[in-house]
Length: 69
Image (cartoon, rainbow, N blue to C red):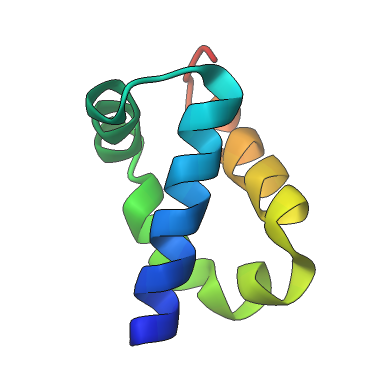
C-alpha cells in the first residue's frame, strides 16, 4: 500500500508541475475525472513503465474523459 501512495503522490506532483497547476486545481481535476481511481486500478501497469509513461497515460485518460489540459 505504501508504494501505491508514494507513486500516486509522485505522479500528482509531477502532473501539477508539468501543467503549472496548484495542488487544489490538480486535485479538482483528478476528482472530477476520477484519476485517483484510475491510478489505483491501473497501478500494476503504471508502476512498471516509469513516470513519463504513467503521466502520458493519465493525460490520455483525462482527454478521453473530456478534460481540457
